[in-house]
Amino acid sequence: MSCHVPVLLGEVLEFLQPKPGGVYFDGTFGGGGHTQAILKASSPNGMVIASDRDDSAVARGALHFSDTMDSRLKLFCGRFDEVGSFFQGKFDGALLDLGISSDQIMDEKRGFSFMREGHLDMRMDLTMKTTAADLINHSSEAELIRILSTYGEEHRSKRLARAFVEHRRETPFRSTKELVRVVEKVKGRESGHLHPATKTFQALRIAVNQELDFLRKGVEPIVDQLAPGGRLCVISFHSLEDRIVKETFRRLSGLCRCPEKIPLCVCNPVRSVRVLTKKPVKAGREEMAANPRSRSAKLRVVERI
Ligand SMILES: C[S@@+](CC[C@H](N)C(=O)[O-])C[C@H]1O[C@@H](n2cnc3c(N)ncnc32)[C@H](O)[C@@H]1O
Image 1 (cartoon, rainbow, N blue to C red):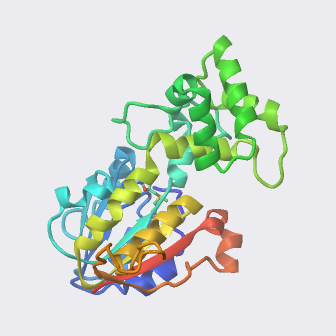
Image 2: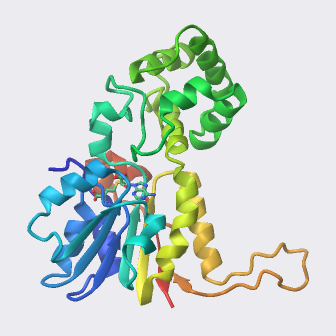
């Protein structure tokens, strides 16, 4: 069983309008909460093609959904930018719910949580070579500053990077708590409503999993596989993710991207989607109170023309 609570579930269903006989793609299966709701709304014969780059999410899902596996749910271990390699047909709707799941955070062996003692790993996909320990022990100080300030929006990136480099000279980082202790030495134990290590952990996780690169690569292939009228919903949790989604949607909606100074358009925009959300949709107060993860969630949606 998964402990992940899906965010913006009602809003996603409202946009996707799953129907019997429809085929839907869930590119970030996680605990399967969105998939389950799509299967229910498209019953008795709607299909979900789902994927996750984390093989433990796929294994848990295969057990939990054993009733519908193969008949109505096809579950693959893979990244969503590779969708064409595991399904070649058209989708009536698709969803990406980015980031990590509560199941991944709660599993201390994975090293995603600053609250739990664990090996500093943070790979969603265990076939990837570089762990968080590798990054923090072997990146240059300048690279650590870049990772912390860009992916973590950490204001104290320089002081932290310096402290990491000094610490690893004596003892290479191995565990989550070791990293937390060094962060706390620099930032103090309390810093506002966030745990002092939140931004460091977020930054390392995004870098280890190259999350922004795969998002940049992943949206267009999914849009290409949408049937006319099919919708793609993307939920992001980080301002850089949201910017990538917004800009990709603008480009695919045919808006000219030439600099204002150029008198004639040279970017040859092609229009393949209509943007349905001028502003991102956010969780309502009740959901934010019940599920703190939803507070930073932003949903953007396009419809295939
Ligand atoms: C926020 S969780 C999804 C939760 C899910 N919607 C639910 O209701 O349970 C994000 C999941 O996406 C997976 N993931 C992140 N980036 C991915 C990618 N590029 N390709 C495939 N899966 C990815 C993570 O491993 C994680 O399991």
